[in-house]
Length: 448
Image (cartoon, rainbow, N blue to C red; front, side):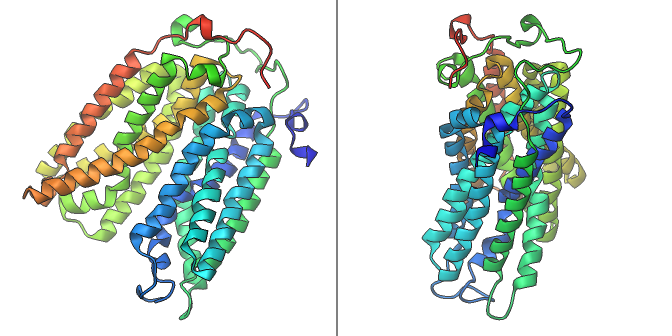
């Protein structure tokens, strides 16, 4: 297995850096399937009853733990294995990610066959979740090293794949369920087997394609921006030292607040549309899918824009424009203007996705390229926190409003104002970010 070693993946003369983003996309489009996991919710609650839930079948709250555990392990594994990723390089990391993600589906399918929920949770939630974390951060450091002139665009191309994974994964899963469904099976076990195998093959393709640049490589004609203009450092900070700086925790708060606001709408998009405008469920579900397109596109558009505006300025756009847009959501409901509502929320979600894609370049600017993947892995814990806060705030506050006899159509209004306030706090955190003090800079040889 030595061909997976970092030194074996150093690019030879003539290799084009534009092959690296497709390799990263091959991984991110596969692991982004977790955003489309909801297509399996109902079938997993009917494994015994087939057409409807029967005694002994799992419940929706139980099944929801598969999705939640996967995202929790994404953050934890990214933080825990970040330094290992930097040491071993993207090829080995992507391969291990493929084994965990594809193997997680296989273990989960065995759990479905035996009707053992703990085994499904172990497979999809734990093993698959580790694959998610490794796959998510594996290309980050490599991309920013290949594209020092356009780091935002490079990471945006890869990370938009994660946001768009559901656009492939959800229809793929639905089609497999229809194909394998019989009077005696919901088809979930077979669907998991096929998806595990297919995702493994595509992710291995990505791992075999990726290369790391030779030491000292720079694109022709590259001129670094100055620290005074863009807060771009020419030094490096290790992952262990980065978490001792106020800049790391300010960026942690920046990501957490941006994601908390956006994920609240994304997770409740269908219900919000139905409650606020009385549209049918099919329309609400279509609206949720429509937002996924903007989630994906925003990751590329906004992160590419940050290469010209600078990371700090583009985050001010996310926060300040976002706060205004959240305050407009209740207005769209009072006006009864569905098109206005769709436009406002689509722009909000595009900036939610943009925040994910821009943060690796922001970290590169602040801490250098030496261990940016490991630092990114530790920062992703902000996503894990936001994944709990955002949906809970939207759900419980709206339910509380309904219990106080607030009209259903207006039950989300207070939450929108609260999200706007969170974004204002995020803007304040972003304003406090300054260049990292030189005492944190690495002054020795590259750490192992």
